[in-house]
Length: 337
Image (cartoon, one colour):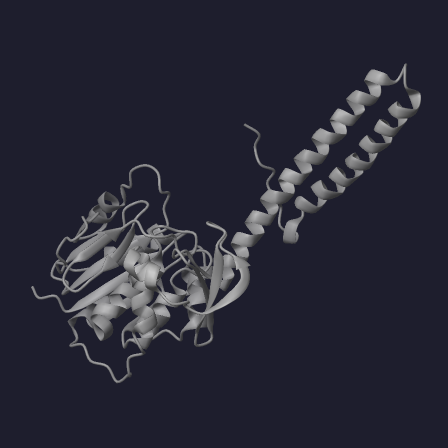
């Protein structure tokens, strides 16, 4: 069985159910290799290959770095590692996180587009935020075929919806319709009427994903400096324009779409505000204790401490109310260890 196509699939929340539905529709002689990235915890063991193997006729596995690509195999990204495609073999690397995730979908999609161009089929399934949108756009630019799960069919519709906002997919399908389409597409000879986009920025993105230090040390600025800091390493973020899509990347390779960066900033801001609330409440409690301790001997000083405590308690109450209604959503107070 010859390798005709490369199928790359990305998912997050609700993605296991959707991909199992896809996998059960694959025949044993599928003339394509399948690569799957699911946003998972970096800790612990992933049983996803076992789940997928039991779901259909194809075997699934966590590949080793450098493993040859074979048709009829589902390659699953292992925890805390990016899964990348090269010509004829797989890369499994612990490069910088993208869109807060490792494994991330965009690096897989970009690597497949770089090496296999019009032979790539990219699929975005159920998930939150917009990882995969930039990568699906790259697949389209390089002549590949793009498929998005119908948001109405997805448990978490934001990932497929964001993908559709950034690239007009060739097919919008329910999960149950995706496998038959992939089987038909995998059997067709690969050709394209699209002119492939420049691969220069694509090459640089892949070098960052692989944590190629020669590229990182010698790389010219990937765009213009922004006013924002990287949420992970606090270095300067460079603004990268990909046609109408806005992305950011820091010097060491952490990458964000504008949507993910905004979400990360909100998360960081909320954490800082909870710390400020804790500091206010602790300071108010200490002021009241000091006021009580010296009340009988230093009445004026005790009154000042009481006044200070009341002021801080008012500020703390306002801050707590604001935090619990952040952006109209119920915020969860962090647990105290």
